[in-house]
Every structure is written in structure tokens, then in C-alpha cells.
Length: 82
Image 1 (cartoon, rainbow, N blue to C red):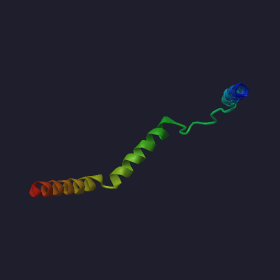
Image 2 (cartoon, helix red, strand yellow):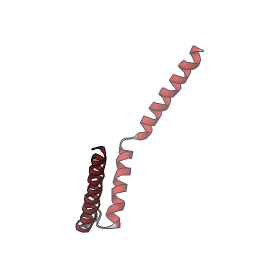
Image 3 (cartoon, rainbow, N blue to C red):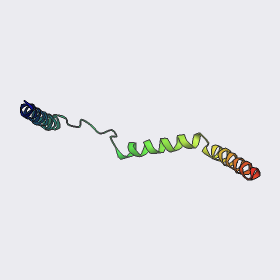
Image 4 (cartoon, rainbow, N blue to C red):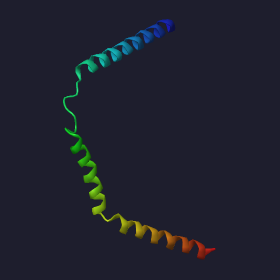
């Protein structure tokens, strides 16, 4: 009985592997990229320029200064406690 269960499990695993490999091969033959996300190099570069401009618009230097000041206050409190 145990031997039959092991054999059945082995056959099930083998069939499952065949199905997965076969479906992967079939899918790779069907799926074809239809178009690129960016039509030209200029539009690709423009995407990065837009992101950089948005980061500067948020005035990250102000946030950096606020965080630096907060860190110095924290250090001063730690040193004053010793």
C-alpha cells in the first residue's frame, strides 16, 4: 500500500512538472512584446528629467537642514545626559 502511494505521488509530481514546463514553453511562444514603453531615447531621457525636476520642486535642501538640526539637538541631549 505504501509503495503504491509513493508511486502515485511520483507520477503526480512528474506530470505536474511536464505541465509546468509545457505551459512555460507554449507561453513563451505566444507572448510577444507589442511595443516599447518609450518610443524614442529623448522621451526616455525626459522621464528622468521630469523626476529630477519634481525632486527639486519639493525643496529637499530645506528638509535636509531640518533633519540635520534635529540630529544635532538629539546629540546635545544625549551628551547633556551623561
